[in-house]
Image (tube, rainbow, N blue to C red):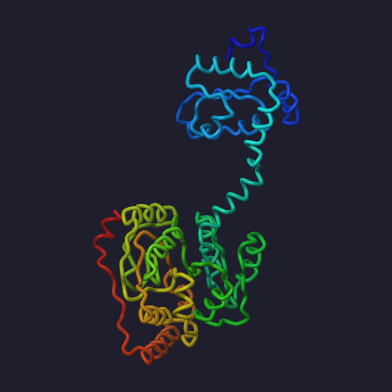
Length: 387
């Protein structure tokens, strides 16, 4: 490069305004893409090819994989000697108006609008997932939950529906601000606390997704969570309900994962789910602090039973109904979601919480007979993974 200014037939004009480039291009006899053949350029799409061909210019370029589709219109070269020879061939072509028209036609569909349409079509190939988050108070937990979902969900086609059960704190105002900043998020504000089942039913009625995920506001999701839930459900139509593993819950979904803050939680979760990729643990019931299902499953089984009021046993009931309809239930061992156990129910106080539990247990047993308490899984393997 240092020798070029000394050559009388070369002029370095420096950086130019974009508007001036068509004038330069119109005077060229041959356009060049002289990339070195290295790993970086093999992973590169040289976008200048579209501008050169759109101007009808003969082009000489390094023989890159990305340019093979244009081999009818580009002089490709594999080394310095061939590159020089191809420049001479291109220059000898002259300003052939027929070839110029053919080059322009070859790339006339390569517009940013067409790329945008293609990208949109690819995104639509990912089925829409509706994530329904039910809130009642605990604003700081709600903020943490929703921020983790918005910032940590790479799945390209999902909608967020937040239902607030008349929170007594500043939750409602904060959620309205959230909806203004994220146009794809829907916020539904109930005038009363209609309970867990009714609140989630309201959110699902508003949703449009082929898949539905119910997520408590006292959770934090981790990278890859939504893709893996959808992958498990789409792979097996007999699988009706899928839940994650977590740090705090009263059944087999609980694992022993050691962490002290959000950063160490993400690191520990990443190690655990990587070592359990595509693994499922089949169970009789899962807790609905986080659960994914197909829309067709919801339509078959029906809505959550609103007789369970504020909560407790509506998830056990739904799992019984799903199994009765022929669906299997599983815990996805490659999905970890942090959970603040009973964050909403603890605000009731110990006595009211226990009364609610006993009331709903009676309702459940009236429908299904004696309730079998949940059990924990063997945590030996999980403890080893945590280390």
